[in-house]
Length: 141
Image (tube, rainbow, N blue to C red):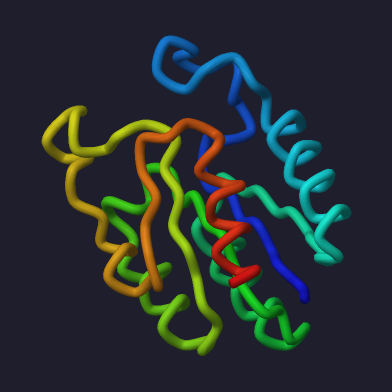
């Protein structure tokens, strides 16, 4: 099984950016934890992060060509604005689970609507970085 984890804007600043909201773990910490989980469960996992919308869309299309079995995405702020990423998710016919570290429904009102969520198979929100592992567990079903 091949899974790709895609992180959007500012996720490369985990542990630095607003630790009272996002915690102290870095993106490298999250990736190392997921890699360990993947190794134990015979999953081939890859990671991608970009602050650029087009690069994220390009990576979705690359996942299609690479025959990836599932994608976990934290689109960051693009979840609230990017119809282009939503369309990219729809175009690839791969199950996608959207993850948000914070509970988007308890924050500023603009964060409570995700335009990308309707294209995803499911959404995990507010469970911290544990949400990534829960998304990975979904693909083991």
